Image (tube, rainbow, N blue to C red; front, side):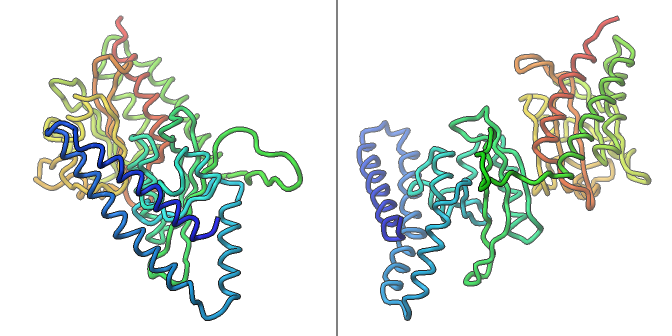
Length: 371
């Protein structure tokens, strides 16, 4: 598909969306704000996507040489015909270009996807991590890979590999996102399977060791003493999995049970902190939803310690997991586990967050075990 054809498709999609907005005039007055937001978004799409594309097309209509045009057409054709789903996004995950395979996988047409955040095509739980990793790649911090789930097939995990792409004509690098769905790969001499990832295998083995150590600790913990079970779980997670482990017991009335941190760290200040003053802990205890943050932006997200300093700043937190301890989606919360990583340690991944979520249910069941 030529660039002119793509522009025509985008323009046709825009006209259809405008027609839909016109038909929304009859909605109730209390819903007009949503329609107004959609209209503003479409105007922004015209200003920042369609109009620059039109200017570029009119400029390219009279290029200095035909050789460059032919090479650009060839590169565009190669991009579109790649067998792997590929999308070119910016640091905010806004889609600049998406090939045919990616449109088939995501269920979103290229004309609709262009100018919209790719994170919006994912389930809500994966969006923050995807944005954070894309921004890190755009900043030049190296390639990243994570597991995400698409909105139209949330039960199917998709591996998203992000790498920086320097075009040479723009000051900031773009991000090339390659989506690898599960299932058998095509067979034949032209099908190249993924190379074994020793790092991934090592991390998987570490998670299995963590699960084994946690199971042993929970089975040997004294029955009928939920606080002791929580302390045992914190000891398993500390060091091998997280630099800091903060364990809070209860839900309506939170009580700090254990704080484990690095050597010479201000552990006593965090132990004296009131868990009710930690927004992340309170939210997890009330809503039962886990939180994964990479480079937390809000220094007050975990409140302040006994000395009055921001906990996240003082502990030099680079990533965190805050997980409620509950036996199921409709079960009460028995406590909250918060894990910090700091310094040069790798940030928590989605796979690690999923592993901790599974372990949290085991801890909750062990805390409820009676004599």
